[in-house]
Image (cartoon, rainbow, N blue to C red; front, side, top):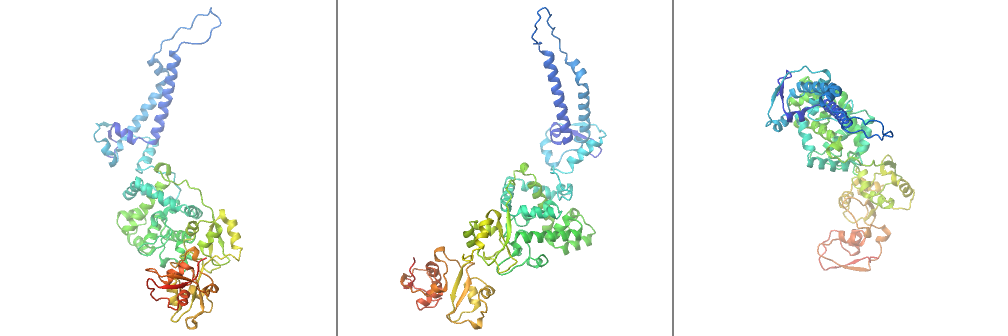
Length: 527
């Protein structure tokens, strides 16, 4: 224990726990130097000369006796004195500071003895400060790093470092970073380009676990957890087809701009993060009310919301561990993924595009998670993100007008149909139906006319039963099918690759009629 005057107690266990890096390096060097010199002296003095003599008349070289005391006095006295001085200095400063509470259990059973107070040197004071500014040794920090002494010393940060560095915590971080491999390199580049604290790149670890499709209970979406009411300033759009809160490029740039705005307003990156969590207005009012602009002071005073109190310590702890992968067993040695954003000449289905180009469907969907139904919007400004390794094949596919890159249903209008009912039936929107059927309107729907509807969402068909063009729908039903329990025109339409409405009309029935088990229906013959 220490009383602040430099006095304290020394123990063997405490010595092992509390010596500084500086003393460790110097002691190691001195011991090594002394050991080598002593060993060299012993060997040279103890061995018999073995020089081959060519003249037998020369008298043999007499063996010289070795004196340890003389050797030490002659060769090592300066080293020993320097070592003793260092031990005294270290004892007065490092050992005199006591131990952390977590170390006390390890040394309480060891006998102790008092150590006199010694005025520490400037070098050892600096070394001692480096040791005691934090329970943890920090990696090399950027000038504006969030990993500060105050952050690492805070009890919440220590708690989360302990939690995240456990076996379960490291496994969880590794799983999160595996999901981040497509997005993290881009995020790091943007953070560096804007001159922001490097730890901000790991904010999605805390916000969403780097799950691109994450949705909170409050409705926040994506890596950066944007709410609908906060996206307009950042050119992030949400429509029937896309939710750009799940676009890792747009959402990253939007989130960093938001953080930068918070920083310019509050003057602190910690407060900027607090405002990102609970709102710029709420944090600004807290700062104005308390007159304090230090996040850690506000945390200690409980002036912030509970979630916001834990927000920055979580980020600091996660960044602290991820930035030292070898120390904590973090898997960050992943090859950078190269991608490029390209313009599209027409709408495409991501799945069909993947089949034609050889790109993994999962890869395309992960890169373009903003596509809610796997269909690109009819927007000339939209850019599809693709792997550069397949760019040549992708360009070749896009240049071919004969390739079908999107599937459609062809619905034959019957009595009672409306655009709204069709949108519900095919799990799409009225706008999408209008977009693919120029001039269509409820009042102009005619029984028997064909409505083109993109095939996406929950209405799917097997590859062997893809929707066919209207000409194919009028083919004669020369086959037969005995209805099984639970079947409907919808399931049979998918089975035989035909529009359910056409199948119902071919059997002189309504689409919603119940099919009774054992009934025989006319169906097309599968080739």
